[in-house]
Each structure stands twice: as structure tokens, then as C-alpha cells.
Length: 291
Image (cartoon, rainbow, N blue to C red; front, top):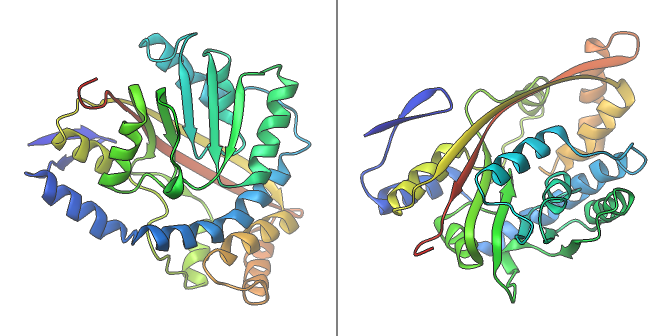
């Protein structure tokens, strides 16, 4: 059987076990202990990105508003809804959900991101967001949420993690995942130049979620978006951001700095580097078993 997701046809696996094994083998996610160790290496980068947002003008994110409106139009996000936002980061989705629901629990492993979220929520007059710091791999909430949500979060990377997400959900689970055709203009080239070989996939492609949910007997609803961003960064900022990023993969600054500076100086125009981020994403929503 075939279906169309992200503008191409892909084969659905015959059995749940077949799909589960293929997904987990492809991702090479490893044991929970392995994932926890990898998580720690990402915190410095997330904190760096959060710090860049500390003095930015506060407003609701346009795409998060679109997602929240879509959930509300389908009756999944209502005034009485309680939401768990897994991997909330600085809270773009949490804040859009909060103005349409009773309470949002923003869950993230990076304290700096949660601090930015709390500050921005206060400025927007949102008092119904609680921030919870921790890692998904060890998270055991004492309550059930109406809606659980996660966007581009690498933590939801196995069949067991999907079941864990369902177990804390009363009405609907929602995931935003990347689809084919997404790219960053410079990042792939830099990874090749620095010979970066990530251990464990950094995110799960949408088709894996869809296929395994299909074989679990769920009826996933899919809504696709394309977002295209073009912006200019000072050479110094482009270098520093990528120095921090590549430390995640064990590349020390003294190794990456000369390569990054040569690369971005060559690409620069009047001291600025033009960058592009093109994202094709799918919002996948489904009701947990027996819900």
C-alpha cells in the first residue's frame, strides 16, 4: 500500500514489528542512557540560541499561531484544554497554545530557554504557563494532559516513546516533524567540510511517525506546511553560532574556527552572510488507543 506524504509516494511496511525495527535501525538512537548523554551535548547550543533572543521584541510566532488555530478549528485546543509541550524551547508554541487553553506545561531540558519563555510569557500577560525543566527520557508526570504536543523534538524517536506520549494523553497527541525537501543553505556543506558524523539521528522524519501510527491502528490526521526564511547574519555571528553548534559533535572551537571563518568570509557581502532555511513540515495528530 502507498500514500502521499511530503509530495512523494512511499511504501507502508507490512507489519508493526517490521516498521519499528526499520525506524530504530535507521535512526541509530541507541539506549535511553545514550540519548541522555547526547542530550547534554545539545544544552550549550540551545542556551546560546536562547540568549540571542533575550532582548528581542516579544510577539506571537506566526507559524505557531497557524498551528494553534488549526488545532482549535478541529476542536482539539479549547478553553478547558490542558497541554504538555514536549521540548518547548523558548516557547513559541506554548504561548500560542496558552492564549487558547486552560493551562500549558512547557517541558524542556534547557533552563536558559525556559527562562526566556517565562519572561516572554509575562510580557504577553500569559499567566497559565508552567515551566518544567527535565529530560523526556526520565520524565514521569503525575497527571494526564488533554493534549500532548512536540515539535521537531528528537526525544520522540522510538515506538516506546510514542506509547509513553500516549499514556499521558487524554484526547489527542500532536507531533510536528520534518518532511523531504527541507534544508539549511550552509549547514550541510559545513558538516561535510568538518567531517561531522552524527551518532543517532537528530530528528525523526514525518513518514516514520505516520507509518508506525498507521500500523498501530491509529488514524493520523496530517496537515503540511512549507516555511522559507532568508536572512543576513554578521560574519562574526555566523561563525560563533556554528562554533557552538559543532561542539555538539565533538569538534573543538580551535579546529572549527579557521574553517568557519574562511568559509563565511568567502560567502560574505559587506560583512554579512546570506542564509536560507527551508522547512517542509507535517503536523500529525491522532487519538491514543481507546480514546
